[in-house]
Length: 67
Image 1 (cartoon, helix red, strand yellow):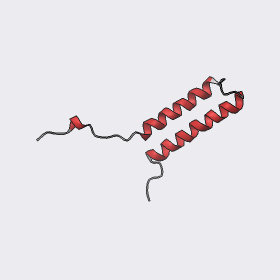
Image 2 (cartoon, one colour; image 1 turned 180 degrees about the vertical axis):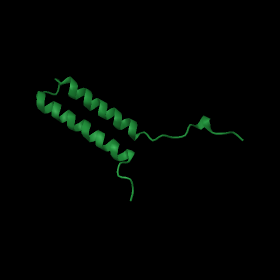
Image 3 (cartoon, one colour; image 1 turned 90 degrees about the vertical axis):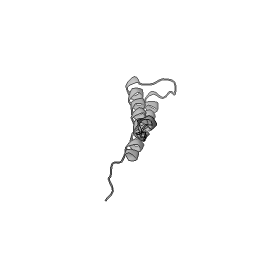
Image 4 (cartoon, helix red, strand yellow; image 1 turned 60 degrees about the horizontal axis):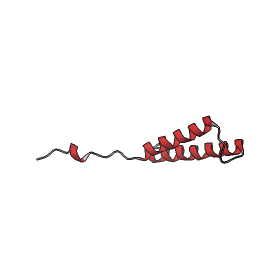
């Protein structure tokens, strides 16, 4: 059975969470230009976490051994 929580699925979950937090912020304030600071900070943080999870770690080219 493949692992249930992969990096891709976690990144997608954090992205959906960020969008939902933005929607809740928009519904609570009723204005696109006014925001609740806590909700906005939480949505931005979830987007940052999603970007970090989405970025696949790769080996550095200068770390390769030279013959």
